[in-house]
Length: 413
Image 1 (cartoon, rainbow, N blue to C red):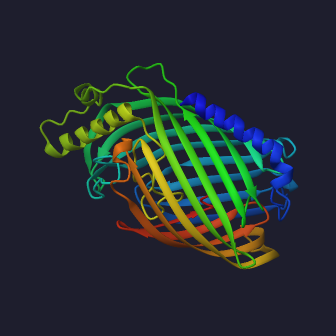
Image 2 (image 1 turned 180 degrees about the vertical axis):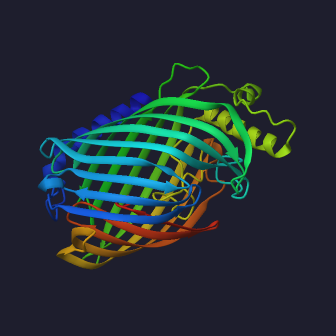
Image 3 (image 1 turned 135 degrees about the vertical axis):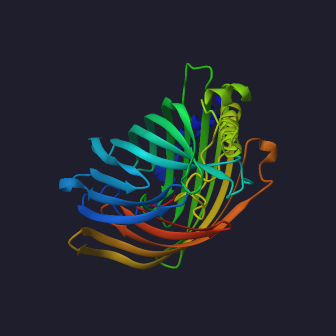
C-alpha cells in the first residue's frame, strides 16, 4: 500500500512536469498580489459543540506591500485564549513560502458523544473541559509553475490538559485526578496539483490535493497511525463569471500500531472516582470507550464545522474512514476592482458571490460499515473575494440536527 502510493505520487509529478506547458489553463490574474488590507472587529459567534464567545479579530493582509499576512485573535466567553497566524512569508519570492500558527487556549469545552460514527445520538453527550490547549504549527511550501504545483510539509506540536467532565448544562459530573495531560507532535506532507484559472477564486479546471499525517509516539499505550487525505474538486463555468463546484474528499486512518485496548485499564487510567453515581459512571465509560476506539482504529479527519458538513457542530462525527461529496453553485454578483475603506476594514473587492451548497457524507470505523448511514445538509452563504487574498465567508447550513452558522476567511475547498 505504501509503495503503491509513493509510485502514484512519482508518476503524477512526472506527468505534471512534462505536460504543464501543453495543458495548463491560463491564469485569470497574477497569483501573488501585494494589495494591503486590514480588519479590526469584535465578532460575537456561537459554535455548536464549543459555545458562545466574542472573537476580537485583527487582520493585516500583505503587510507593507509584501505577501505577508498577519491575523491575531483574542477570544473570550465559553472559550478563553489567543491565536496568532503569520502566513505567506516568502523565503524565496513566489517559490519557498513559510507560515506559522500559534494558539494558547486556557479554557475550552468540547462535546464528547457517546459513540463514534454517523449514528451517534446528538443528545447523548457530555462536555470535556480542557484547561490547556496550546499548539505551534509551522508550514513550509514549495510552489512551482505559477502555483500550479506545490509540495508542503507541516509540523504541529501541541499540549492538552483535560480537567473535568460536565453535563450538557455545564454542571460538574467528575474531576480527572490528576488532570489528564497529553503532548504530541504531528508531521504532515502533501502536494497540490492545480489545473484551474485561478488559485484563490477558481472558475474553471480541476484541483487535486493529497496529504499524509503521522503522529509518532514511544508510549505503547497510545496508538500510532497515518491519516491519508485526498481532495478532488472540479470547477465548471456557468455563464461568464459564475461557477459550479463539485468536491470529493476521503480520509482514512492507517493503523501502524494499536494502543491500549483493555477497556478496564483505560477506565482506570482516567482517574475518575464516581462513588456509585450513575451519571458519572456513564460519562466515564463513554470517554473510556472513545479512547478505546481511538487506540484500536485510529481517527481520520472529522466532519462538522465550517469545512465539511457545515450544518453540524465542529468535529461532530469521528471515525477511521470518511467519505464526503458536495456541490456548490457560486453565483457571482460582481467582478471588478473596487477599493473600499470603512475605518475598521480596508481592502479591494474583486468579487461578490452568493453560494448555494449541498453536502453529503458517511463515516465509520471499518470499511465494511462505510455508507450504512449518510448525513446531509443544505446551506447558503455570501462571499466577498478580495485582492489581498482573503475570501470573507459568512454562511449558514441546515442538517437534521438543526442549523449551524460560521464566519471564515477562505473557501471551504
